[in-house]
Image (tube, rainbow, N blue to C red; front, side, top):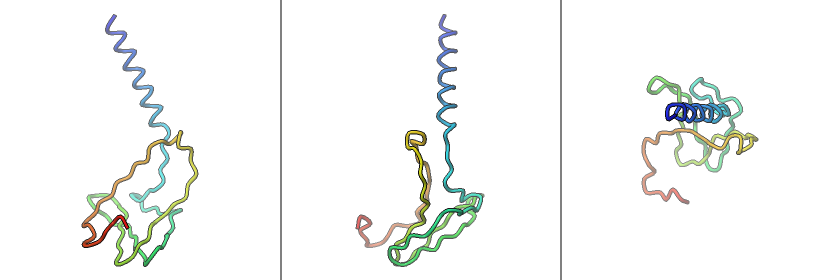
Length: 102
């Protein structure tokens, strides 16, 4: 009796995993060199955005000197359908002598 119960549990977990991964929406395809739909938002100065190769993949590089801006993409989505946001970034160095909370 224990073997069928384990099989049922495993099948249920697999079904849940398939349903959880089915709703995935890719908003930025930087690794393929696609910046379609993204636009600059300048607060002070301008950040330069370029696609570069690093560790065998294409990544978005931001460079700013005494500036504050962002790269934005407006989307409408149902947070119940897409409850998780996932991204990664790398910081080469922190701001020196600055209060990043201000």
